[in-house]
Length: 257
Image (cartoon, rainbow, N blue to C red; front, top):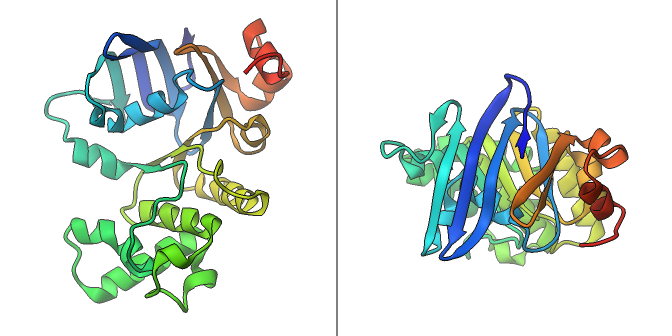
């Protein structure tokens, strides 16, 4: 299944296949992901959504027995090329996970962690990055007076926005989000959704979600995955109102999944 877009693509995926041992988890995926848009990836549990997103920054390779074929180009460079450093890729393509996973450190140290690894030592520079990142994640006002308290003392929704701030601190280009609100209450979910809409002005966002209302609310394009294949990918409004494939229609109208 091929899903074409315009020349505005930041990722170009061509004939991607992935296996966990003998299990063929992703099958012949070809699609383009446009920059400065929110692309939602939907589909039933076990259909390959998270595997696909974790392939875009090669995080999936942390699982033993994974092998891939095909190609993924990020800004026209093949991410599987032997001379492409995975650390460099993961700096450009950040990740926010399903459960908030702050480090057991202060709020400040959580956000300063990445810049420090990249060699930034000056306190004034770090202070500026921390403030800018927390503002970017729409949580600065809530935490500015408690930067040196442990991040574990925050609510789940606040922790998730700290994780987004930690991701922003290394100035990524793309942010991958794997069901970032599934562990959050409705009010925190709304805050993260508002944040995603704000962030797409400066970043490309790819979000895995099992919540179709969420995909409809926040994404520009949606890809529907089923059994490791992309069944359909289109403008979100069109995919939800007038899907081309009956399987897409059956899924979004709740007949299965």
